[in-house]
Image (cartoon, rainbow, N blue to C red; front, side, top):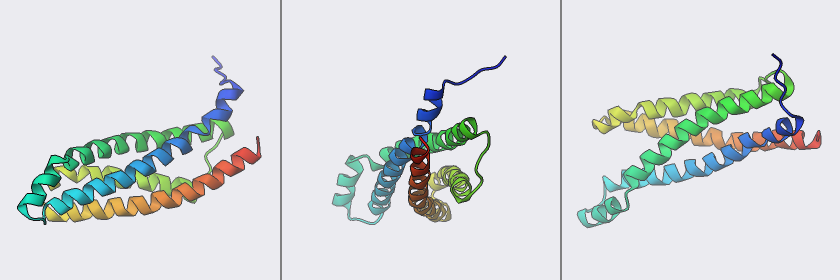
Length: 156
């Protein structure tokens, strides 16, 4: 059985990955903000702590982090699949390698959560370090991804 994807779907599917990744980059910024607020809760006076706890940053951080983990993994797989479908091959270069690295970083950071919940400070510091590295790579990925999008548009 030979299943052929319509040309219109092939063309426009190339833009799903970049749009999703820009949304995830913004969500990563919010995850950083909410994570810093959680960290801040540990060091402020009792009254300010009450106000910060009421804002629910811990729950928001966990929800955003879970969504990021799921959609980053799916977005990475989807981006690779669309590239393969449209070109018959993957382009192994810095953008792909860094994207796969980011997927590993976010999975590793998420895996530290149970240890953090038990008060392990090394796990917290590692979680923060992995995610700051992830955010730096993500910004760089956004730039290189837009170069790829420009190449795709120029070939249309």
